[in-house]
Image 1 (tube, rainbow, N blue to C red):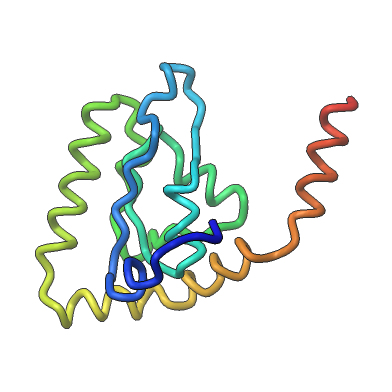
Image 2 (image 1 turned 90 degrees about the vertical axis):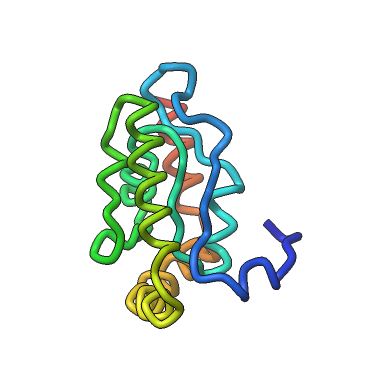
Length: 137
């Protein structure tokens, strides 16, 4: 997460994340990689083409997913093809906005973007401790 071209994030209103897996080998799990963490670290709104419930998993970790600005209902779609199509429609609808509308969307996300960035950069000691406790149980 330390090596990124700042201009790729500074000059864009939206990040379209193409995660490594969309169905996680049909396991029903999620698989979040650096592709999702980069827009979080760089304070960008994002749409994730990933496994079902990826956004839900992020929310459970304390991240905000711009649900009041973007229609993230695609995240609940279990069918991979339908989830792709719903996310694709959201991308097309969003990128068809004019520059003022895109700027307004970004501004509406500002508090959530800063919250996510702060959470990402925060100490993870508590999560690591809980993981170790869970392993030992």
